[in-house]
Length: 354
Image: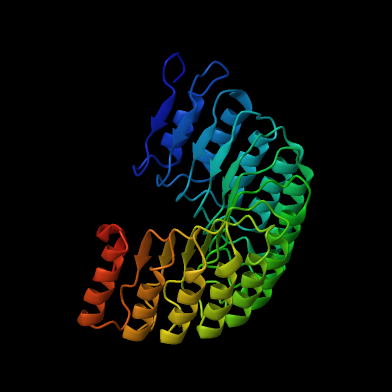
């Protein structure tokens, strides 16, 4: 690392480097280093390695990708990294998922984002312990920076509707530019979903993941109301593992009739039955933009599945349909498979069996 002028990428993930190995590698990253990509995920790196990597970040002007997910940096390691980020202008992707980072560490990172020279485009802080307070600090940091963030991953961080409100403010801000947002595994509830929905008509967001966020029909209705707007740019919406039933499906189906941007809709492991499937089918009859519909793990029976099949006659866009782990009989599966094939679609893009 110290002397190579050709090494651009180094991947050492899932080893046992520990603090000593991580610190030794960091020492090799000098001001003359040509390294652009460093992947050290799952290596039991702690605060000592974090301090050395932070120092390396302050020296290098070439490193663009740094992957440190699934380590043990905790707040002290995050603080040390943040210190180096204040003096770094090359890093564009920083992945810090599952590192035991809490409020203190997140606040240091937010400060570096707000006041440093970073050109960060992608940030993953998923599966830490940020909570609502850290979300507020992070949003303030992102609002203060000049360059827009492309993707933000904050899944499984104990964030509720307060965090959702702060992130909605970020989405509404002029020049935010955020394209992808993952908040799965946070207890946002219907209130949080509604706050985010209000911002979607203004934001440039293309991908929103709200899996396992304690969202029911009320929250689905709020999101569907925004999907009806021509100004909503969302192309992918994932609502897996929530409590959405027929009323929410009806609202989403109605939104499909007028929406021309959504290409991927996933409602896996919710509470949809035949009525909910029929409501989605009605929406599909007037929709040509949706390409993927995922309905695995619901309570859909033969009637709902066949309603979806009949919608294929007028729908020209759907290219993938998944209905595994529902209540379909083998006879209904065979009939639906034939409907899919008769409409000219590829059988491999339909998933009905285990």
